[in-house]
Picture 1 (tube, helix red, strand yellow):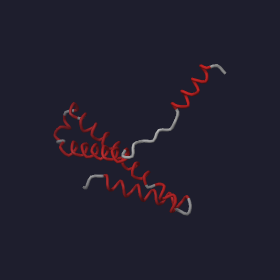
Picture 2 (cartoon, rainbow, N blue to C red):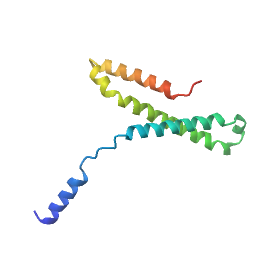
Picture 3 (tube, rainbow, N blue to C red):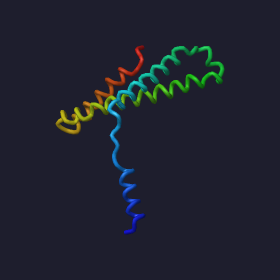
Picture 4 (cartoon, helix red, strand yellow):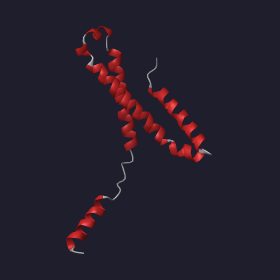
Length: 116
């Protein structure tokens, strides 16, 4: 093996070394998703129904719906995923794990959805 191949393998090994994410990454991501969801909800609440007559004014509410739904879904997934290992350890079988996970998804969805 020549020196170039050894260097390449070393560089490749170094590039593919797993990197630990920052300890507060999940907390920061959750905070960002909550902020995005709240901003989208505020935008939709401030939208006037009279604006429906003009299709040019549909862009902001449509973007708010897409952004709010995406951020809300990501927030639910992030929170449920954080508790998945505990559910897996506490479940006796796959059906019980699925039931606990679905209940957790429903509870988190109720928390994320605006009060109506």
